[in-house]
Image (cartoon, rainbow, N blue to C red):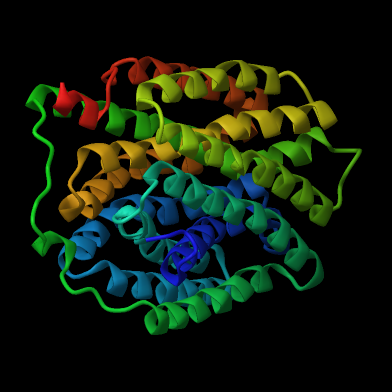
Length: 391
């Protein structure tokens, strides 16, 4: 499977759309809240349901991906997330919005446990393939910032949900037409597991799960909070939402390319040797970001997001190296359920925490979480699965 195949292209677009939909609200929340006579801090907790279901929904999505088929689940993903986005655009109050966003989270949960295992199952260079896919996902975050800012300014927040929804539905139709049916569901194929000591596997999965939780906290805080952070630290200098959206998009887009470099390194070196310094570098950058503002913050935000995005491929790489393809969707689903359900707390706390303690305190907390993640990575085996099995 090559990155230029229609399947790979559509799967990468799917990753972009998945993150785009989850970040539209974070960019549009100020406009929605103003129209409903609320502060953005007060409206932000209503999106928690989307992120809870993004985690919990990964378990049934992964099981269906392995046992029913990944192609069928991806069609459901595209059509479902598009339909739920249209539903969000029709909401009239905060509780309708919370319900529609929660439904969106159910469909958004499908992509990671289904799309990524489908993408890498025949990849010649899986690390780079994961890196390209991660870049696509993060470019979706960048597009969410700039497209939402543009549409909110010129057509209103409802259009910011409706336009990507129509694109997603179109991609679902194209996926159904262009991608052939699977001969066998993954769970029915012959096993190809590596014979590794149970203690080693248990340690790897413990590290993977715990770092996924801490990493998801950092990811959700930064991707959902950086837009409002820029708005606060540029106040009096830049007020236009479209300009702020463009700056946020530039932060995310520039930082996203870190995943390509990480993907190349994953194919060449043991995971621990790359993962540890990437996570460790987040600590001083969050500390620095807590103290600067204006264009200095903009530069530091690009730097810390590069290392946040650069850490993303590692959990998928761990699953790829230690888990048989027959059950990768289920393992990915369980990992996501633990990490994103816990990390949804970050979304619920973001508005109230910033309102009571400020962004500086939030960034100091991110530095502490990154320190914990780095300590956990130290427990990864020095060698990866193939090398350990050979030894």
